[in-house]
Length: 304
Image 1 (cartoon, rainbow, N blue to C red):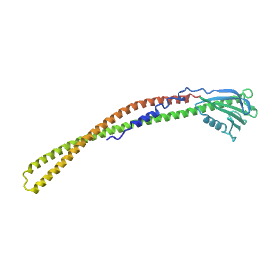
Image 2 (cartoon, rainbow, N blue to C red):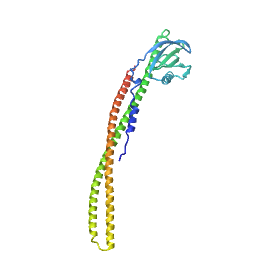
Image 3 (cartoon, rainbow, N blue to C red):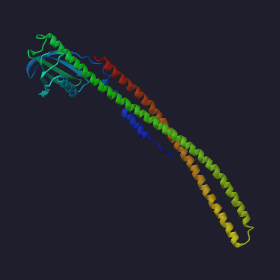
Image 4 (cartoon, rainbow, N blue to C red):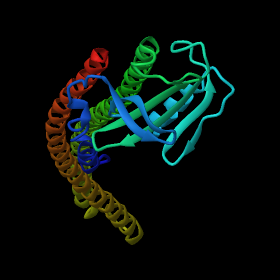
């Protein structure tokens, strides 16, 4: 009898991933990380600083990573006021041995996050005019941060694409497993058909035996003397006819089982054929997703 009907579920599984990894920023070429010198108004007035654009990252992640970076080697506290993140008296040896005040404004744009950073020592804000060496160190510090943030964002992209790939592979495995079960069901139905045909042969033989026995018993009935003996013989004949009737009913059921099994086999075969098409489509999706994942991995390697 039919026990597996998974085609509808398989179609849902295929639809759930049909567009996985085929769109989004993962397909973009790697963006250059450059630092520009800027002059902008901040809480300390109009100052010279620098900005870097970071792609794919979220403002929340960039702000969190920036706060962690400037607070790494100090007991000073990172504060935020009026969209400005700042810290007073931090220590960043890559820039200066003197304590630093760092002010940053992080803006969220449609396709990137912009980090505007300003660095102040006890001698004033660092600029190309008053301290070229420290200014270049600040540029490197900010660019290194931009590269790291961009890489982190692409790593998240890779994880997302890997998850999509795992989902597609899981879908494919489900389809293949469903087909394996369907093939096993077909094998079982075929065994049931063989058993039913053997049962029909045995049943036919038993019917023939009973018919002969009934025929012979009826032939002897006329030679029986005595009312009681005749009634007993007639009773035995009726019992034999009842057994024969039961065998006929059983024989009909065996034939019905064969018809049902053959119908189930055809249904399983249609489902297997449909699933084979789904397997082919899913394999194409997996190939595409592998390419998306490869491009994201190449992008990560290309970020400098």
